[in-house]
Image (cartoon, rainbow, N blue to C red; front, side, top):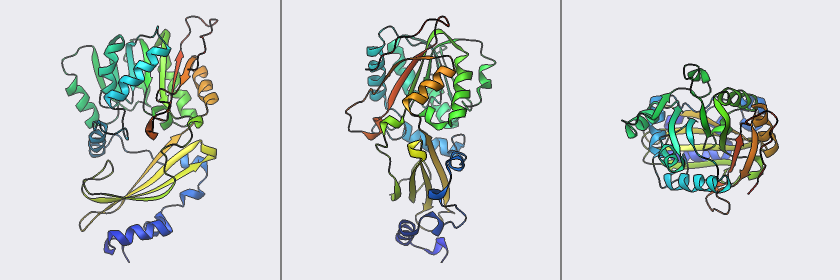
Length: 321
C-alpha cells in the first residue's frame, strides 16, 4: 500500500512497529550506522527561507525552551555568569548562531558596547534586524557561522565570544576545533569565550530515545499545516552522539511527500571541551550549570567560560561553582 493511501493511524502504527524503513525503504537503519556515518548526515536546513520562518516562530515563543532561550531564561543565565565572574563585562560581542536577538537585549545589562550576531536563517536575521533597527552598535549578518570568512572583512576585535543554546554541539570535534581557532583570532587578549552546551556529564536529560509519534495540527518547525512527526531517537558512541531522524508526513490529502530531517548533537566530555578550548589558545576559568535543579530538561546544560590570556605564561584561575 502506498503511503498516500494510508490513514494517519495506519502510518503511525506501521512506523512504531517497523521504523522508518517501512515508510521509506531507501532510508538506512540508523541504529546500525557507524558513528562516522551518523556524523555525516545532513544538518537541518537553517538557510532555507521556509524552514527559518517556522524556526523563528518557535524561537520567539517565550513560553517554551524547545528552540531557544526565552528572555527570562537568558537573563538568569547571564546573571549566573556575572555572579561567578564578577569582573566580566560583555563589551564588544561576537555571537555566531545568534537566533532572534534575545541575548542582544539582555547583554546591555552586562556592559555590552557593541554586538555582531551571525545566523544562517533569513527569516531569523530579518526579524532581528527589524527588532534592533536604528542601533548603530548592533549588526546582524546573514552568514553560515561555520564559514568564518565573514571575519576577514571585519578587523574589529571582540571582548566576548558567545556560542549559545547547544551551538557548539552542532559541530563534529575537528570542525569545532577549527571554528574556535578561527573565531578566537578576533578575540582580544583577556577576552572571554562563553559556551552554553551539553556535555557528556549532563547525561541525556530530555532526550527521547526510540520511536515517537506526535501529531501537529497547527504545524511545526518541520512542516506547515497538520502533519505527523515520526521521530527515531538514537544514542551512539557511548553518548558522544545524540540525535533524531524525523519524518514529517502530511495529515490528510494533498499533504505532499514525506520529508526527512536529521538532528545530531556532538557531545564532548568536560575534559574534551577543555582541550578544544586550549587548542584555540583559551584557558577555562568557569564551568558549571546555571540551571542546576531545574525541572526543565532543556536547561540541563553546562556553561563554560574561557579566557584568552594576556600573555602566554599567565594561567587563568580555575573555578567550578
